[in-house]
Amino acid sequence: MRTITIFALACLTAPQALLAQAVYTTPAGYVTETIKGNGAFNLIGLTMHEPVVVTGDVTAMTSNSIRDTGIDFNTVLTAGKKYTLTFTNGIQNGAIVEISSWGTSAGLTNNDLFTGVNLATLGVAITDTFIIRPAATLESIFGITNQAGLKPGDILSADIVWIPLDSGGFAKFYYSAGSVFPPVTAGWKNSSGAAAGNQAIIHTDAILIQRRGTTDLTLTLTGNIEAKTTQVFAKAGNFNYVSSIFPAGATLGNSGLQVSLKSGDLLTADIIWLQNPDRSGYSKYFYSAGSVFPPVTAGWKNSSGADASSVTLTSGMIIQRRGLTDITPALTPPSSYAGL
Image (tube, rainbow, N blue to C red; front, top):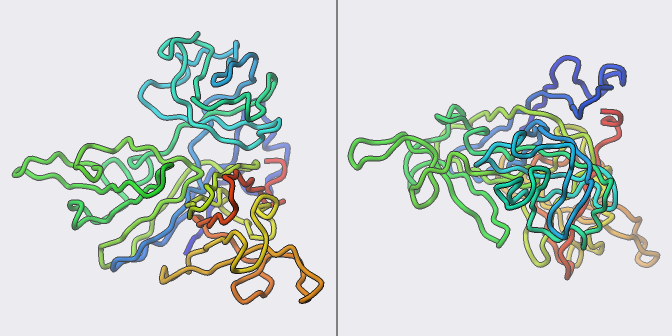
């Protein structure tokens, strides 16, 4: 179960006058997610996001770097942290790329960002605008000392956080309470037992929380609301674990996913898998382009072929990409987010 609270003056219907500011700002609040116990795998997406720390304009670029002559990235970004860059207009409106390095540390000027992605091929252009936000981490989501209350232990006994990898599969993480013998320092660990508190979680990804504890937990996620179109990545032939981005009001019908996903029927279309509230399994949905014979109305369908346009998106979902090419479907915000 997911509940949403938006802080005062930051509601989804807030008057435009309250929100018109010279800097990029969005409402803030929190959501709560129920983490089912007794071995359940809980699919969770981050629908509250890290605050934007930079807004900028592309004033020059190379194939894999951009420049904003008005920003000193050596000053505004912190060494050792992972950041993401989101384009907010142009051909790649809503596209997100990870920032590899910046400024003089990357052998560039202090006004440059390096992404490792061929931005020119993507269609990024001078005068495009962008925002930068830090990536969430295990510590920022679950607390430096595991304030979320996940079951501590080791890789065989603790609750496990599964984070999807770009190459496929997952990396596994857990919280150790520490021990004197063998000597183990308390903190977040990867599957090899190394410190991992700063492990980044990109906000377009969904994660799995394997709850080995016997009781259910309530996980509270705080942050800002994303109110603009956001692209997610779906690799061909894969099950892609992605966030639904928006904390409230998102449905299959208003998601915009049908623009990019392969339409068809239950056996041929790209499939959206939404986890059932009790975490016992998933419900499957697809988009049908419709047909005259047999008579089928175009739209979102459930596995029985009934209309599913009003189905609410869970915070995390799986896109089973049956199409032959990788795609970046754009999730569009509900109409109630207009003006935020």
